Image 1 (tube, rainbow, N blue to C red):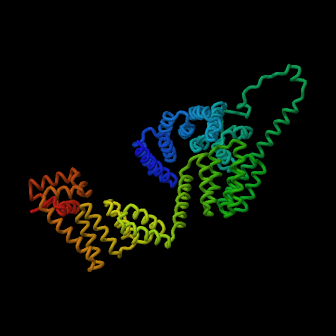
Image 2 (cartoon, rainbow, N blue to C red):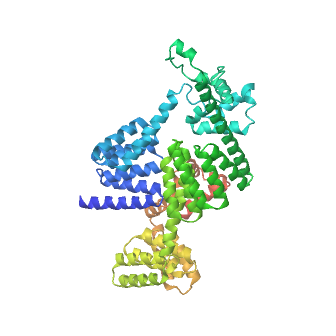
Length: 560
């Protein structure tokens, strides 16, 4: 039992390391192996749930999270995992209930509190859209443009950049609809979308009960209502002007006239300081100018504005992503990772995820390079040699491995470790190290000899002979290589007199396995067996000839 626990912990550690490095598939595989050993380990299910979520496999993440709660119903993390998975699946009501259940266990858990608030915000947003008399008809601008273009009332507006900017703003932030209802263009637009003739903004307002008496309504002047109407018109004009300024800023941004773009974005902010996109667009200019401090400062302001005015999560995520990208440009990867993660918490996009993984990879590479030290590598190599001579082969592997980390370009280190692996009968690892040795230094004779020995031990006689031959080509006096070649040759000759050994060795070759499992090749071989003259016809086909030659080389086929 203790042994199983140790093995599952090893797989957990392997999975955690892979997940940290962005190797999500490897992490999932490691956690799965750990679960196979210890099926009641709730932490492994929890970690795999997180890995599935990173891989955007939210249904699998949910299944694992539910298993966590089943195994440990009093562990808050399980509820956090489940709630998060449900959020990604846009099942906000269920997610809200899950976070509430978790908070009953740990009322101070910040992660559960944050998840609950996000769900409540999303549910509130959804209820707003559903309760609105017209809903959100702008959810997909591209789908309604043909109708707007076909109607004379709205077709004339499509060439106006402020009108298009207004539509884009509504697509991203439907709550801003109320700001545009006094704009006659919006009245016409909604009428065309809904297929009704709406003459005024009042058509969107529910009738208000008249609480005054007839005498009061006739005796009181209408000045307050007129003033209110004037204020609403003035506000709408400011919003309209702000969008005009934004559109001008965008046009200058595209032409890379950044100072003029900044001027118009600033004017847009003066007119309407509640629109998050004005700030993110301004930050984009600073980013292009390489002024990353101002870019970040403006993005932080964008986040504050977005939070205060309940902007779409996607827009907040965009601001955080730009902060992260600016740090990435300055190679400040730790800060970049911090803010890219914040962006992904708000809204997951492939681009942001790829940037995060690139930063994590850069951090790992920087750590690897910082670890390189040839002097310390030599010390570890000496320790490895001493352990090898004393027959302490596991220790030798450990020292050689540390030496490789300290100086990964030294071919001899891989050769030494391959020799230690051979003593431990880890032939596949010895082969891998010998091939890496040859890759680092193709002229290093010992590397080819190590490869030949590993292949010989794995009964890959023909390949072993090739490796020994390359060593002999490099050094004709390499006794170990010539002896290995002769040994393999004698074994090969003995094996050829034993048909069963020939067949067994041949079928261990993946290429032979593929040929023998091909139905078309089976039919061709049957024809050749029953009709020897058929061979000449089939050999005219280069691909078939190549496959038949392979079967002849391994001794499975003889043509007379």
